Length: 257
Image (cartoon, rainbow, N blue to C red; front, side, top):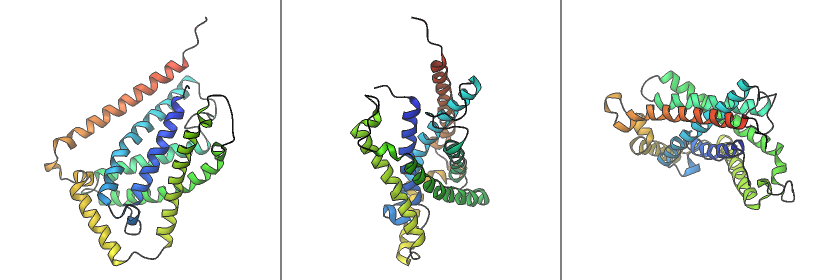
């Protein structure tokens, strides 16, 4: 069974974003902390670790789309691509870039630019609500993928029962995240105990998770933090080179037999 790289990247991004959404909601405030039992340290650790492959895959996909435009392969909206120059694909690309930019600011501005921190936190949170609502609409638009009786080309992954179960699992996580947003925003104000539990969770996160490492003063940064920037840059460069190679290989004309 041959899988397109675009197809694999699409579902990797989908799975990663579903976990990012739930872990991120747990850190929004005392209203949302109940999602993961006010274990903010775990939510922070999961969110930051998964943010790395999210950014890498995003750059691979953007590199693919850019290469298609430069080589003239992209004609209008790509039916099998992750991004396109219109419709939901364009919305996905723009919101992804906004998540990445604001996320980087949140990671690096704990003890520096509080204005940038507050603005990025506002955009990051509100954008999550918008994207989650759009994902529900997108899933309804693509609901044909959930039909168990649908049979297409033999060997098509979409006809495999295990893959449809995986789709249902991912879709359920998005509906769960939307329900969390509705319950937390529409419910009563958090109690004193909930506020205290959230603040306690935040303090533990500052001491025991990557949030604490990111908040260190420049004079006390350890070697791992110092190496993170060049390592991250190298990974992004590798992702762009890999994307360019894959597009070049797929664009090569078929040799006559």
